[in-house]
Image (cartoon, rainbow, N blue to C red; front, side):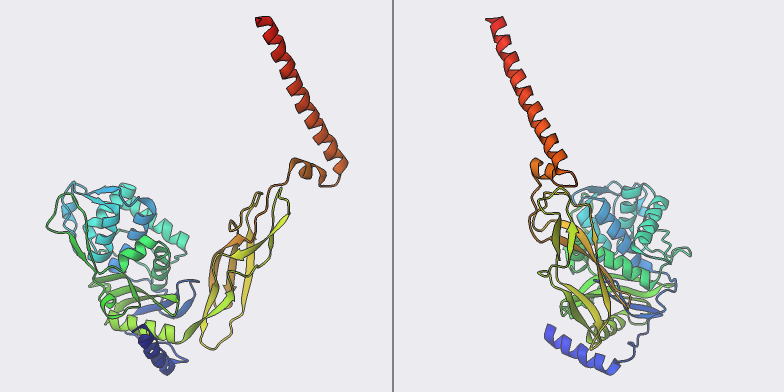
Length: 396
């Protein structure tokens, strides 16, 4: 089935080669998840209402700030929250892991309210945290004003910023597991009649390469969807905002993206790159290797120039084989940028005291210092022994 989809997408992509995909969405984007490179965009930096795709950020902050088994308690005024709900009762307790499923599958506005108060104490404080995290990720046109996406004239983001947020969230396995799940029974302390959370993303049922993420809809926002799919070993993030048909638009973006792009191996995980300095080691340098194979996503049939740099950390011996000692930064000419851990290619033991002392400009000085240290240590031991003997004589 997967190979058939690849063939179909390739055929569709061949028809669209040289031009972008046609979609009904007012704003759209296709982003390579590994590098963040934009493969296609349509009005991707125009601020729009995101509706419930807002919950990607709320889910991300939940994962980053709350342990999975922590009980989230529904506020006393949770009943005032409108729209899509999980029907929380005041004081009801739900584990953070299960709350994530309620947010991403049921799109529970009341669950978002409970999460916001648990993490930050108030909606304004949580909104501030959302915006700070968005800036850290690289968002430039986002202003969140609530945790659920209920319409607010000041609550705006863009297709590009939503793709960046989704890319960040998909780095967490627990988030990936939640958004690709079609049905999930949550644990809760009071409302036992409403346990089953059903995913609103119908593409999960029709496309085996789909990985979910989040639907959204309000009248001002229109039909919205942030999606993820993996084919041929790599992932694309797509966003459609104010779409006439979010499922068709998303499928069109996926088919175009995978058909018109391919992966090019930059560096193998078994290939040493360069050396970094090691302090106080038996060797003063160690070769580094990527923690994984590094690929670039490039237009099919094209060669894209790229640059590889290694940013070393302060490395002090002993160094273990496979220890992270640097970061590999791969930048291509089309805007892609990846950060990959660099690992030590061998063990580097710590230098002995004698070796450390005799290295450098004045080895004779080091030998003198070592000799002095050993003499002082020996004298100290003799003094302690003599003192011990004297003590025994006094007590005899």
